Length: 487
Image 1 (cartoon, rainbow, N blue to C red):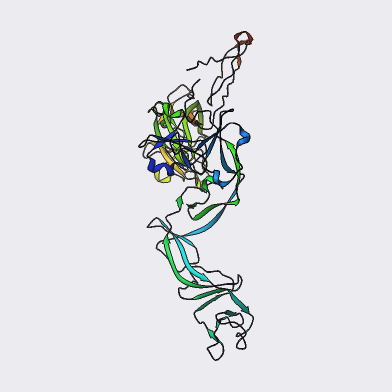
Image 2 (image 1 turned 135 degrees about the vertical axis):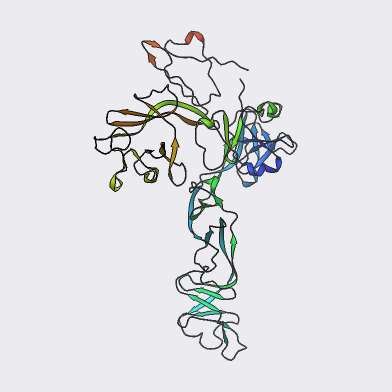
């Protein structure tokens, strides 16, 4: 039985940008070389520099050490591959306020700032040198000779800094270029190049060599804070108006792990051209998963860095109720048969409303459908997905009929007026994602229909890669069996 394997491909110069997910294969189109991720790096398979080491039994695996990172061991008697990776690491994040400004400000207390016209993030850089010192709760250091030459003495009573110097009459020189802070550490508002800085609460003394604001190009733009996990660790993320840094709170422990593949890596090169044949339009994305919709059908969506391979599949087509309103008869008329469906007073919004375009309420505040009488246009309240929730009005085409639509009618929006009740319906198909890299086990359901066994609900939503042979004579009635042909 043959298995189809999804493999990343691209130029060898981009190999390091493709991620190092353990067990993930990568093909360099310019060199025709095949690589596999180990969790820490990508190593070549089958070439002269391959680090696939063959041993006979699993108990011959060497003692774990960092020198084994990036090496793969093949156990001949079990036909399994093993590698060393870090496990059980714990992660957290730090958040820093990033002040938005119309121009770069150099005298602020924040470490980060976002200059909106430039669409750039800047980071404060203070180059300083720390010194050992002696802290005295006095006005001055006292008698000459108390301290060795070159010793820094901070006198908290007078908030002065001295350095011991026996060549002077008093034995000390006062360093007047001092910024004394009682509670606040160094920041952009109190750090001065060429000055010493002392914070009494933290017992720190530094000489400030330079203070500058530099563009922070290493920050990654994101719509929301990423999860505190390994693949985001060691990176900065800008989510207006905060900078997030993901870091490890508990170091990983090295462990032997089996590569989750039944593919013979040594023989895979002979099948590489077939496996990489163009069959689907490939759409690359990162961080935010695209919306599952009709336009996504027939395409392979791929997050290269972390080995996500997804296809969009359609679900059920249903009739959804978007808005409904029942109005009492009124002497006033809004142009809809004497029903009062104009803008209500005091923001008491109805699900469906009518009025002029200028009177349209804010989207997301209770009105789901609005008819602009002066434009003869219909609008539906929509919401964005991912990051911060944002509502907006979208113009739609409205079909008029006197009865509720059915699921087999044309997809779209329908307006049904029955007596004093107006209802807006939508015939819509829901779509969802199937992850080809993760969903590898089948889920099949079978229901009994009208006294006979059928498949009223028979579906696969994951992939089947292995099977168990079953004799025909042992098959029972009332079950559905699949026949698998070996290629």
